Image (cartoon, rainbow over all chains, first blue to last red; front, top):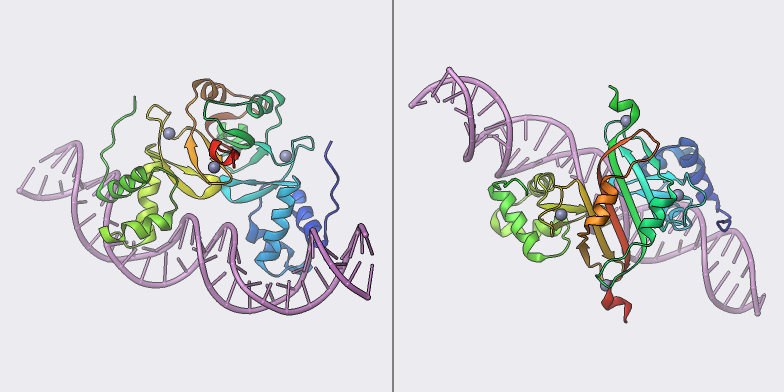
Length: 132
Length: 132
DNA sequence: CTTATAAATGTTATATTATTACATACTGTT
DNA sequence: AACAGTATGTAATAATATAACATTTATAAG
Ligand SMILES: [Zn+2]
Ligand SMILES: [Zn+2]
Ligand SMILES: [Zn+2]
Ligand SMILES: [Zn+2]
């Protein structure tokens, strides 16, 4: 189980927006959408995003510079993330596969490096886009 | 084996720089370093980078917005990439592990999605940084 | 060789993403 | 009350990436 975090005002506004939206959102799109709530500057958005990523409530989709709400409450807080991304419609979903996460969390090679975190992004065509 | 690509002038200048540098380079750092060779504008750099990524001569480290020469001539041209990244010294190396690549290339879940490409980034501390 | 086509280049301007710096306010603890 | 840690507000700017348009070079076909 995850530790519960009490979100601050800005953090809550921004998390609620991303969570409700359901898909990946870009920082400046978030900014535009929360301006009516009094959040006026990019930095206010980025600070909230940083914190939300840190506590695992959202994840950054690195290849898209976008942020998505965690769809997997049991994932190891931001330390082990995997996503599938449709290159046609840009739909993104978080992969929750215990075999995969176990395999990657235990991965080690002969580099002498100790891995404490990973991010995996799969690309392809989703069901809908495939059948077009 | 990979198909051989003949690089254009700008592509060759930029690939040679990245390859010689050995680690991840950022686009504007590349630009600065090739200005004496006549490449003056960001777009010239980005166009060469796009092409080099496309043909698998370099890869983009998404979490760092940086580009590194492919260290693994047998990797499936830009379709299956894995890196280890030291969060302390920012050293990056390409992971060449046939079991891992086989596992990920064959990965499928019940989403109905057909994966054609992936990128994996491991984070941790390298040997050197661990012992500090 | 000429024509056609695709790929690459040059140049300017601009869009998008993210951080620095500094001042202020809120929250919980001793 | 004093302190430490976290969060906020605001302005300016840095860093990353693309749009638009003109021109040139490479490749292949007729
Ligand atoms: Zn998650
Ligand atoms: Zn799709
Ligand atoms: Zn490679
Ligand atoms: Zn290191």
